[in-house]
Image 1 (cartoon, rainbow, N blue to C red):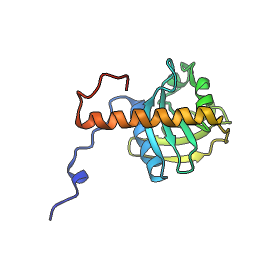
Image 2: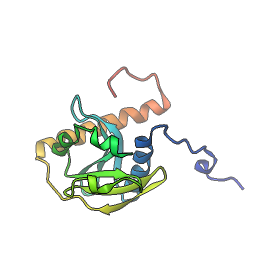
Image 3: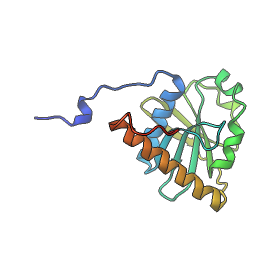
Length: 158
């Protein structure tokens, strides 16, 4: 009997702890019907760990924090708020969650999945910004997909 192709592939874990959290977060979001994209740049100077489009068209941003020092050294996260309808933190189960702002969502993750432990409040994006973000996420995702089968395709920033 032939096994499924994904059963035959090695489980390639990212090297960095934050990327491992992002992988687990993306797996959860996909089970919820989302379209997640890791390491997205909404504007020069900002790079979100995971941006996700919900089935209802909401835009979620998830910032992955692997330890206290990772959180306390982050000076950019508040800039992400203007690019999403809901903002979440993702941490592992040992992270001191009392450090995180109460007015954001929380996911507890590992490389294999995540659990939504606190829903983020909704703060609707302006229509023009939503349109631009949806277009940019689609363009980046499409270019990354093409590069999985043709690494030499294009010289763009994606």
